[in-house]
Length: 209
Length: 221
Image (cartoon, rainbow over all chains, first blue to last red; front, top):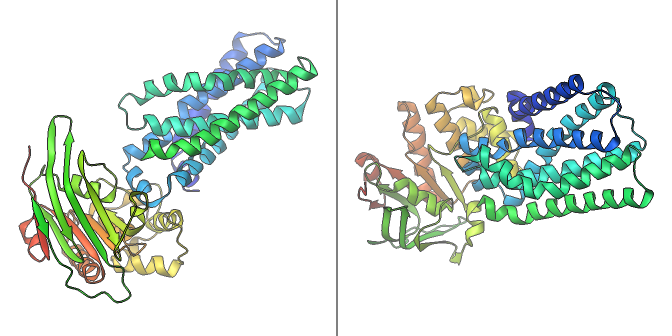
C-alpha cells in the first residue's frame, strides 16, 4: 500500500509508463492500416507493454535509493516482504497499462478477440512475469550509476522467452493456431511467469542485502 | 585498538545487549576507512567520536548490518545469546542523516508503514505517543517532504524508536536541531541508555563527554 500511496501522490511511474504506452500505440494507428494478421497485432501489443514496463518499472528501487529510503526499508522489513510488495505494485501498475492498451487496441486497431477468457489470462500471466522480473532486476541495478542503460540490457535475455510465449498466447486468444498449439503457448507463459515469480522471491534477499 | 567495558547495570525485565567488534576494518577501493577496531560494550551510552571522514557513519552502518566489514566481525548478543546477522534488524533502531522516510507520506503514515513492515500491531495511541514524545505532534499530518530539516530529524528518531529497540544507533543525532530539539534528543538518549544500549556517532567533543565509553576514530582522509 505504501508504493500505491506514494505513486498516487507523485504519479512518477504511472505518467512515464502511460505516456510511453499511449504515444507508441497512437503512432502505430496513424502509420499502419487496419486488418493486419493476428501475429502482428499480438507482437505489437506485447512490445508496447514490454517497453512500457522497461521505461517505468525499473525506477521503483532506483527511487528508493535516490531518496535514501532503501536503508530504512532494509532495516525494517524482511527482504521477501519488500520483494512481494514491489511485485504487487509493479503488477498493479502494469495491469493499468495493459487494460488501457487492450482497450485502445480493440477500439483504435480493431483487434478482434476470439477467446476473451484466454486473452485475460494471458495478459495477467504475462504481467506477473514482467512484474516479477522487473522487481528483481530493478533491485539489482538500483545502485548502479548507469541503471537506465543496464536495466534493458539485463532484462532483455530474461524477458525474451516470456515475450515470445506471451505473443504466441495472445495470438491464440485472437483466434489463430490449432487447439494443441494454443494451449501449449498459454501453459509455457504461465509456467515461465511462475518460475520468474518464485526466482524473484527466492533470490531477492541476495540482491537486496 | 581495543576497548572494553563490563556491564555494571542490572536490567530487570529489559533485554541485555552486548556489542562486540572483533578486528573490524573497512576499505572503499584503495581508501581504508576503519582499521582493526576492537570493542566490547554492554549497556549504556557509547560515543563514537572523531572528525569528518574518520569512519563513524561507516562503523554504525556495519553494526546495523547495512554494510559488511572488509575484515573482522560484529557480534551482537541479547541476554547472552548471539543474534544472527539476519535478525539483527529486529533489535536495532537506527537514525542517520543518510536514511530517510518517505517524502510523499505524512509522519503518521510513515510510522504506521514502518510498524506494519516490522510486523508490529500498534495502535494510533502508541504512534501518537511517540510523535508527541519527539515534539512533532503539530506536524503529524504533514508530508515528510515538507518538513524542515530539524523536524525531519525528529521524525526519523520517532521511526528508529518505534519498536522500542534495545540497541539504538544514532548518527549525528543533534544535527539540524534547535534548542528544544537538542533537549528532546538528549532525554531520548538518556531514556534508552538506562534501559538498553545507545551508540552515538558525533564529531562534537561535548556530546561525547557524558558517554559511558568513548571510541575515538582518527581521520583517514
